[in-house]
Each structure stands twice: as structure tokens, then as C-alpha cells.
Amino acid sequence: MITLNELNEMKNQDFKTCNTNSLVDIRDINIDTSKSKHEKLIDFIEKIKNPYLFKVGDLVVKVKFADTNKSFQEKMEKILLAKIGN
Image (cartoon, rainbow, N blue to C red; front, side, top):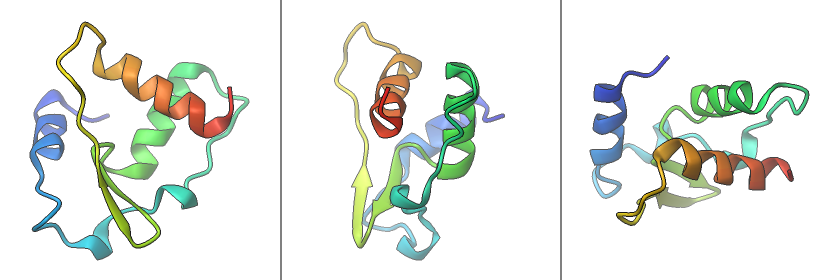
């Protein structure tokens, strides 16, 4: 499981200086829809390696969230559920 410190490091990684060959293409991620919501989220994070920085084809994506009342988990669940179609 990812620690808060590791998550902060991922969040602060600069997409301009990262090795794009090491980024995971989100299109290659498959999630087992029979798992619970929590298990799907963990599975996604383990597979994407960095939920803040990944690829979609040749495009590098850097995820940032506005300063709101929503937690990281709530936002990642929304992204994950949109990906798996729930």
C-alpha cells in the first residue's frame, strides 16, 4: 500500500522532467469489476503506479485537484468509476 509520503512525492513529480517511458498508459489498465469499490481503487492505484501522472497514448497527463472539500479518495473513486462504467 502507498504511504502518504509516497503519494505526496507522486503528486509533486514534474511531468516535464519525468521519464515518459516509465509512465503507465491508462488505456492498458483493466479493473476486475467483481471487486468491491475499495478493492477496485487499490487495484487501480497499484496498476497505474502514479495516479497523478500517467499516459493516454503519447499524451502525458498530470492530475491536479482544486482546493475543495472533496478528498483524494473521493476524487479517485469518481475517476475509477468513470473508467469502469459504474
